[in-house]
Length: 243
View 1 (spheres, helix red, strand yellow):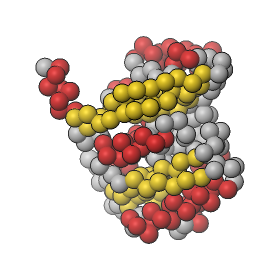
View 2 (tube, rainbow, N blue to C red):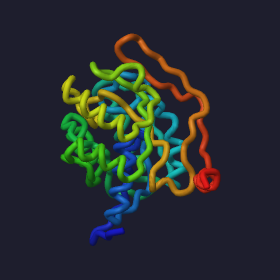
View 3 (cartoon, rainbow, N blue to C red):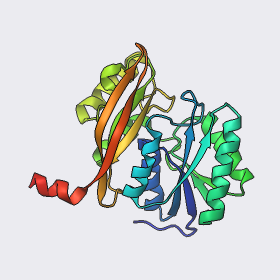
View 4 (cartoon, rainbow, N blue to C red):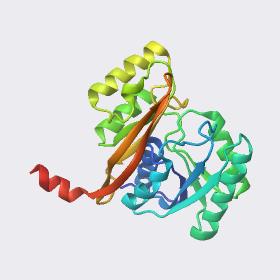
């Protein structure tokens, strides 16, 4: 693991999806300390800022990462939710002594500029280690680095009901790239085209998430994969079963 001269104590805005989880991995790789995960639970499914699908599962992600979780709540109203995000960040600053905020932002200036403003208002630096990456290459990197994740919502032309709950294989990724080119959507879902849940990755210490019960809510144009019940299973036991 590489080290940085100015190691920071980071509170990571965290949804349990691929981007915030991979951002966590990159920040740790850079030598920073992720002191806590900050999850904002919105009652508005159409929030401009926040991931909403299966957001309650961040408690399992937190346990798998062995990083404490701070939860905040918001009604998800367009600008008022920014105040609620700030409150959760300030609470994290008081409780965990963080001096920086981390995000999984890739290309959304709307989100990054607002989080940057919030961080400045809280007297904190902002780290977005994925900002500006080539999105197709990034999606391939997730595959090569053994990030296992499922799609928990879709909301764009080209992605139908059959994508919900799907764990992306290499062939699925090739199909996703083809569809993104055909229908002109963002292949890394940075425009809100889909949301994801990481089931396993290298920074999950000893456990991974296992979905036990689920359902699909589909309205004909967009939908959500709702995890009704999930648990953590021991990764060593899984390896033993495969031997």
